[in-house]
Length: 124
Image (cartoon, rainbow, N blue to C red; front, side, top):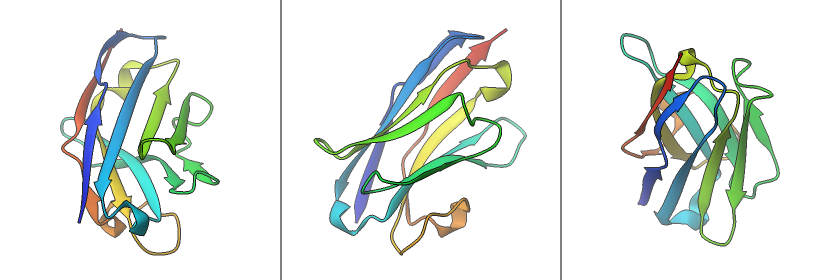
């Protein structure tokens, strides 16, 4: 079992920055990758970014590339999503997910464990 706890969401004005974190515990040695996904009201969940647990490879959705940065803090098994130049369309519940297996994935259904989510709201 893996437990994931997100933190750091909040309200920010357009153009601002927020940092959300995903703390993992339990069978973290079995994690291959952690991904961030988001879901806005009335919309489907969408992929944001992912990173290999080793921290050596990552992938981003086109909509956030160049604005968001995903990183792994090896000292405390935490994955951080730094979000800069935020736009109102980035408003959503952001959830992290952990995947076993052997490759990065942009598909939520391929992730094995999920956190509870944290709200990010960007005002115009």
